[in-house]
Length: 174
Image (tube, rainbow, N blue to C red):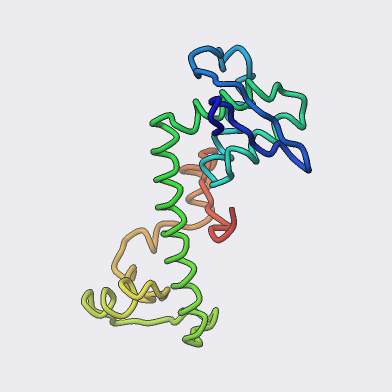
């Protein structure tokens, strides 16, 4: 900020814009910047882009530099944006931990072959599979269940044939 209170920032390429001293309250950001652009700006700020870069993108799409500046300053200091930044940082840390776990798992030589076991105790299952996040097919768990003898494709079609069934696939993709 200069002595006169003016702010200068890059607005893309070799362009710079000087902003006169402005109180955020002087600009009605909700009226001056459309809601969709405000939402986009918040997303960019939460993802760590600089205010100057966000303003540059907004002005390159024809939005007023002054209104973009005021909106970005207003939005970047909003408590909800601060919470979103904090949440994004936590999410990035969790994704890093998951990525590390996947890399470690890939290094163990555990292939895509899922082990099939019978006679696994509850303690063995917890220690060797559940807590290690390793898949296993327990071949004898359902042996005593009456459903094993009753449930067949024709029985299920008669009983619940028109009910929707949720299927989860692609859990590793976004």
